[in-house]
Image (cartoon, rainbow, N blue to C red):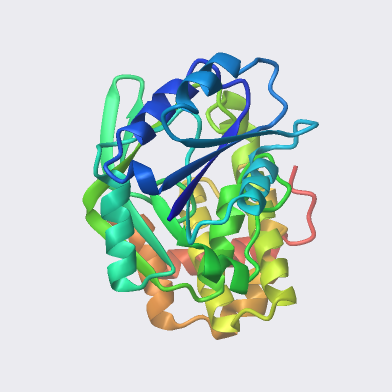
Length: 311
């Protein structure tokens, strides 16, 4: 009933823990695991030999390293179950009922995608929270919906999950929030693609904005509702505003400025209540009571710099 797609890249030291967490699931007989090796330098032969005797396990190796988006897309092409779950090769499912609870919640509510809770471990800190929609963690997707709306991963090394989920929202998916169950344990591991200092210093905003541009272009080509695209654009700019609220002159704001035309294009389709909700989500922890007016200042600043080099 559920295909679990896991991209691998030099994951020999972590993938066994991930597979054990799947093996312990109460609905293991309904789970089909697809490992897509993105041209690793290591061999998984012993691990595959052990786990293939205990679960329905499929292994594929790509000819060249192409990034997790390509690996996940390949996994979707090779798999066939009605529901899809994505997992990273260094994360685990939190308890033995994680996937059963998420599946039961989704089918009962007839959702296209459902979201669970996440436990995040970073060094010695553990956080519990409802997962953001931009990442793949703790979600289950209905395959027929993805196919109907032609939702795919872009050929990105970073932020491909954001682009994928942007399309899910823009296409009008019905989303259920299974917040009473913790589904996924996410390990923020230094050395992974998104946890390097270089990524946070130089690539994060660039990847975020490029993902937004790609997903808007794809949504337009596939005639997704303009109101849905507008809501997603507003959500994205609310996050960017939150990121730059204390420094509009930061070096990486040039990437935001490069996308301001997208905001202008869809601003007339944005509902006032959606704008307020998007900003409130990011600003509530800062106790910023003037976020609507200051957001307008942020947009005005971007307009004032449009066309500048901004370096």
